[in-house]
Amino acid sequence: MRTFLILLGKELRAFFLSPVAWVVLALFMVITGQSFSLSIGLLREKPSDFSIVRWTFFPQWFWYYYFFLFPLITMRLFAEEQRQGTLESLLTAPVRAWQVLLAKYGSAVIFYCVLWLPALLYFGLLHWVMRGEVEIPLGALGGSYLILLATGLFHLALGCLASALTRNQIIAAILGYALILLHFLAGTFLMYLSQENPDRMRPVLDQAVTMRHMDYFTLGLIDSRPLAYYVSGAVLILLITHQVLEYRRWKA
Amino acid sequence: MMIDVQNLTKRFAGRTAVNGISFQVQPGEIVGFLGPNGAGKSTTMRMLTGYLPPTSGAAYIKGHDVFHDSLRARREIGFMPENVPLYEDMRVVEYLTFRAALKGVKIREVRSSVDRAMEYCGLGEVRKKMIGTLSKGFRQRVGLADALVHRPRLLILDEPTNGLDPNQIRQVRSLIAQLAGEHTILLSTHILSEVEMSCRRVIIINKGTIRADDTPEALAENLQSSGTVTVELRAGPEEVSEQIQGMAAVRRLAASQLEGGWHRYELRVEPGEEIRLEMAELAQARGWPLRELTQHRATLEDVFVELTQRE
Image (cartoon, rainbow over all chains, first blue to last red; front, side):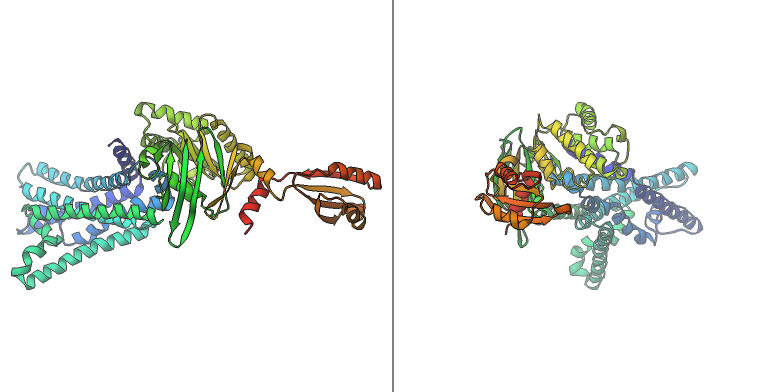
């Protein structure tokens, strides 16, 4: 456990001491802040079926930036160690490969969570400015954060895998992006399929459709099945990543 | 026994890098690991440090199997990999603190361990500098400090002087000499004079197999090509070769002309024979002016070339 914490500390420091992280954080605040202020404007003009939470977290352009986030966070993790050769000094110290993997993944998850924290402040501010006259749907807010965390766990694992496969950060980023997009598009395709044969396929196919999960959770409908889907998916991808790291040494 | 290697083999796709080598290293020994590029030195060291798993065979560090009991074996080792990979964006003191903690130094002792390693390697003046901005010599010293920060009994150094200038090589060498007392050291290098100076034992490896394992002096003595005598005389080759034919110990003679009627003769002599006295008497008897008469001992370099280039 001590070894894991030492590794985690080093990874977190690497995140928060790198300019890339702060650029990502700043950009992300601009995007979510913009979404928030636009959704306030939108709701002031006319009533909407969707809550302010929904408009803030999932505007139409959400999918455009959401997927870019993960490769930016994860591309460095293993690719850089392999390029510098530091994976060798790391793995010849008395540490296990899975401790290294979990520390890197853990630091990425923590950074991802930090990215979403400022958005909470927006709602707090709104509540304070309006002196409680605006209703913030807490269920929808909780649901949104839960699904963002769950999909994040899964997508960050995919990014880790991509980074372990290459020593080039750019390739790691593109590969990670491709894997994440592939999963998303497959889900969208399944949604289309299930619309064709609603009765038989829907119960099974719906479990893999990210877009639909987002819809439910942002309404405050919390369903354990997608959570189980993403978490077990993340575990599976991390197991594969561990195998990739070990295999590279066996093959070398 | 500090290191016990038994029939260690490593095969990569279509290529055998290390082919069934066995050797032992006793505590306190300083062993030089020599061989041309691609001979399997780094691969062997990477197997000893648990980075690469062996294809077959076994290796033990203080009795711990490097594959099955890898963590315990790795705790005994301070390893400096080839080309000294370091985190460019960490400060020297930060990096060493991280490494000390990672290698299991107790929290209360981390600071003193890091200070000791930095003092040992002369890193005081760069302690707050980014590793990425350091010169090659300092990087090498950071690597060395990293290898010994947790006071391991065994140091495995893969080309510790690679790419350094002569002054820096001298510094690293004296560092290694200081470490010799309390550590067992296995180091690989290309610089043979360095091995002669700092190692009491040499293992020469070529194409994945061990070709020699002895003290540098014993290796040089046993070498077939030992014994060259250089003579400079003011006498023509015909005359000299005619006289030298009579000496049984001389196997070959090569002559080259120098300025002012002087000639240099290289005499290849049977191992263990002494002909200098005979040569001096001959020159005196014939009235040849003589200005040089030198016996060359075989150097480790001769041994190295002989063992790694023969086939």
